Length: 491
Image 1 (cartoon, rainbow, N blue to C red):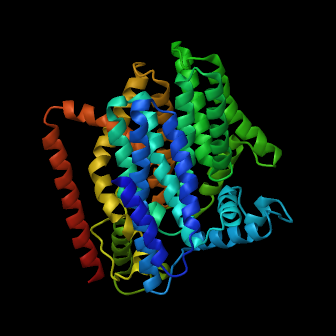
Image 2: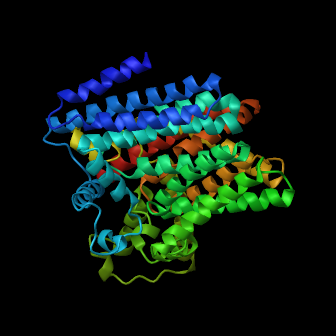
Image 3: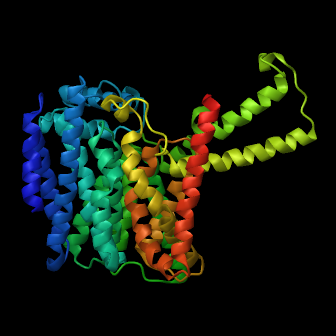
């Protein structure tokens, strides 16, 4: 049934103007990768692995076709600034046969360049148009579903199918692939592939299979290292931290010493190969990025939210005593005002964390319902946000319970500890600096794993239904107060 549906979904784009059949070649390549992933599973689970890919790709093909059609109807398709740059420079790179007159970092103005080469390779060798590149994004996130299924089959077998379906059908992961031409789908695929390789190596005993896994892991590592360097750096840190932690506990980590060497070699080779191409070491790049963030207000400070605007307006009213320019009125704040300012800053910080966790707010509807406006904003993430609101407490329980088990030395599964360290560092970064919501959605496959970890813990809690219902009531009250405050501010 899924295969028949996918066949129909792949025929629909032929009726769209400006779409060539190149996307079918992309699907064929992705299908080959899905078959290879399925081949690594036991015979009884290969069909499930393949079906997860088929249903994931079906959902995304329907979504990207609908989005493309709606864009064309309004004079598009439309691309955001980043996507326009990726598409344009990828085409130029393909046209030049990958020849650059200067170092790629100078040409592209960033150490994150691998996505340009990915798009250029698809354009040059598969002759893909814009729609074909968007389908490639869909296919890469679709491949994350069987990969996460394989990861869970080793670390959390009881939840493997649920996790695979969650990654396959999560609305935000569908929207992330179907809208625009972002690099995030390839980052998701690279991240999940590298995690899958490391987890598979912990249980693999066949020498030839270890070599193939290591090769796949090296490709993923090089892509991440030159595509979103901190994703690679945080995975590298998580690997080292896990090895040190389990070594301290004297817990066996890999069934074969060769597998352990190959897993370490994946990260080491990723560092060495890019270092020879003039990339700084990951640790130095992370340190440099921290300095950049601290010196860049747009990155280290959030835009003013509703609470900040109310606070500023209230302070201005007290300062001016009327409709005067507050800059022209000298004000001397006493100790009491200083204490209030500190309290306001603390509350503002909590409000900003709430925005990072619960934004974009689904209760703030768009003023314009044209597709171009919906695509340019974060409105197409709204369906996924409703799912996120429901899963967030479960994810927090899963992360918290796993963290406690690590602290008490009762969690010794390499893959679980590895994912926990990675999630903790990556999500701390997301909450501390001003990144787009896409940075959170890139982590969804991993966070959904911890939702599967947290669900049994939550179910064992006394009166968990009462607490969960209270959570939704509190969220509804916050939304109501927020809508009312916005109305009063705009009146």
